[in-house]
Length: 367
Image (tube, rainbow, N blue to C red; front, side):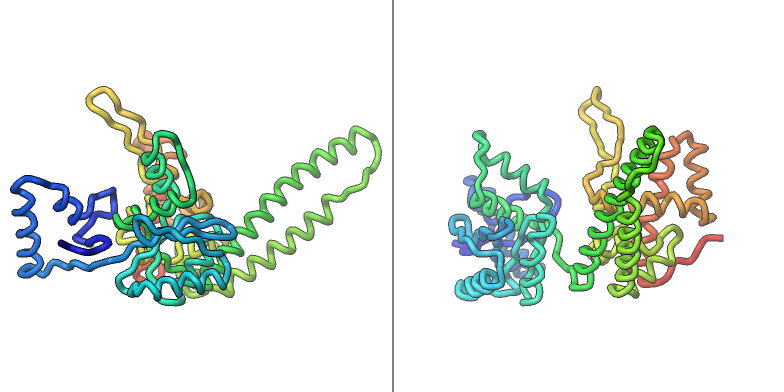
């Protein structure tokens, strides 16, 4: 009998593929025996890479997290330095090896970052699970819509077992950029809101026929000054990568910082198409039989902040780069809508970003 939490045998990262051991165990016909001996033969003679791995699923919240160490055991730890030390001590007590343990947590915006950063510093392998994948799996586990932190941790562990999630690779510099980009975005939104309120205030002032107290102008001046301070802070983190990206047409100071903050490291994408899907610009396919042929909208499953930055970059790039300008005009002559053609430029720009970033060479414009 094979004693393992699960056995990694070229499992797919694109679906819920049942582990090889489970398939062998639940098959009762003669083919199961043949498959088992074929597995042993392949391992011995073909050098198939099999590794006994431990999967751990973590359901994170603001003040605590639930950790599923196996299919039954779930423990609760505080989301603090003391709680993190207790969790790592529990891993060591259970004799989990760092090179044979895969820890997964659901992306929670900000609450999972402390866990990921501390575990990465301690040398543990940790992956981040898309919340959509976790919620869909949890929804299939109960018809009564039962949802608890314990069940969530066990569901995340199942996703980790099946190879889902992307490795957490953010450095302290990338985390700093994340905070600065989000802070600037909040101030820019506040500035836009106050500008609209000031316009309404000026209209009322004109209707009243006299001057009214203006609280908006000094606040807007302060916001403009703070935004400039944050933009100067961008240059203190991941400067080489930002400079490399800024060699690409349309990529400026803010968009370069946003790219680094959101993507972190382009090397985790094996192809530009995967980066396109991460951004959410891949087509959404809806086909069924001969009668259902849905329109191919973009999926929009990725980061909205990143799509917004790349849309602005594409708008500028198609005006100033000869190659992208010809590409944009070609799409228009093919009958594409203006925004569809611009979206195509945006995808093209992502391919350029991936190539420049992974090769670590500046962009060379097409004559």
